[in-house]
Image (cartoon, rainbow, N blue to C red):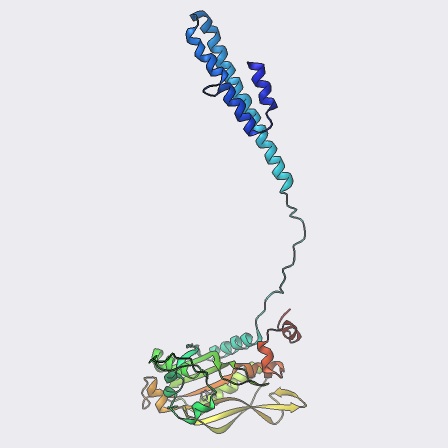
Length: 343
Ligand code: PHE
């Protein structure tokens, strides 16, 4: 019995075969178990020698099986180690895409925010989908006012019978003035950078572009404060002293209104800001109209202030000498690399 099973254990080629041997030997109906059942019919003297012998045999078979099973497990582990190895010293594989970088418009957005922050302006934001009240009415542009027509506005579709007020993609960041007044009251000193939308497309216009609005409200804010803030801004932004020129203009939401030009030199296609005696228009501005203050919940007899709105993409084009606005939004890596915006 002993030699038979010990050799069958050694011969077992896998775990299943080994289990068969175990059942045949020491399972409930195995040969050793059957032999043990015989003990009862033996004389006490024989039982005393046969009993321990069978127990010892059972133990020996049990540990032989355990040893064989351990050998199988070792072999399986060896096999895994052999087949699943990994050479951690291999050089890494390059990812398919180049590392990311900050888009020039985002760079200018952040830089403008930082310069105005140094002058005490906080940042306010508003929704890109606006009710026409915020985008127009609250800014003193009533229904049928010609300014509505001039804005090339994208209107949100309304199903027949939908009675909610009309909404638009905001055509400028000026509606954020109203949100900020309603939420923060006066005094107030904020800028509102953001995306704006107009149905327009050529070398200097894209249907989505970026503006930064400025708004300062206090008891005695004047156009002189506006001029100082803007000259400080442009001087910091272009890293050179920049003069501004105010030209009388008209916006429904400011009175008086001015378009602001910055000093530059035009020579054969390139623009150099801060020198020469040409002028380039960069923003609209003025003293906030009393009706706008009222719409924002602010008493026009107690508070006054200036507002301006400037194109972020526009000043980015000027700083980096980019002639075509549309390239900003083409996601062309070659273009980004050419201007040093991507590695
Ligand atoms: N909202 C105006 C525009 O988009 C700019 C502007 C802002 C003018 C604030 C005056 C005051 O053109």
